[in-house]
Length: 331
Image 1: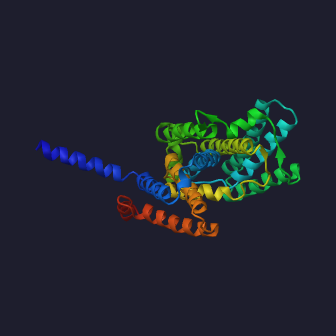
Image 2 (image 1 turned 90 degrees about the horizontal axis):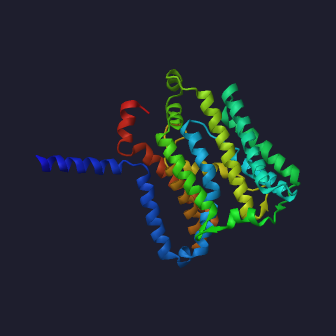
């Protein structure tokens, strides 16, 4: 009898592990790294990893906030423009001899202002997020281009540049930042009441409101988070590039949404994790990097990504546990 109970316990534990949604993607990434290591010796070179880590850190920070929005059933397509504008403002302040901490705060304030505008218009006036954030996409990008006349801004502040390229015990500073933020955000999404509310809102907004959740307040705070995180990405990007490029990160919002969906989020809301989204972004970086290292025409990248994305969506719909849920609930 004891053996039977132990066997059942192990079987249940194994099933629980298999139902972890990030597990198949993690396994795929491990295989992908092994294959790239075999096919391209350059993949393991230090310079390649440093480049990937720095780029990943910049986009990953914004992805954290995008994941929160998608879980709650909304999104923000203005983050790329906010990143560019925040980087431009920070760089302009540094060039104008404003102290570095105040310059960075100025860039972050721009992101908070953009996020607050999106939040108030969407949450208070109930206007479609696509329309509002598309408007902000145009506004922020236009301001960035107008104040610079489309020209990049060069920054020579060594401390600022270190934020984008500096190493701490051989690890890029930006990568350390994204690791810390990812751990904190993933824990918050799983354990902290406020962030748990995002799942209830995304899963059933009407039901969440009936249980007493202040949807307007949660949406406003989440959009402000998104603006601030996008601004932080923009500041780190400018630090890495030693200045600001006003037309940088055009279309990155779609890349981040794809990364989140690959990692387990859905556009309907109510599902997804920060850790899963990060794995999705790692896949996109490895995909792009592998095609470069193997000399494959870059125009095939969207084709490969599209095939993989469709496969992931089908898996999420018909994976064990998900299929039975769809049959019983129709969701």
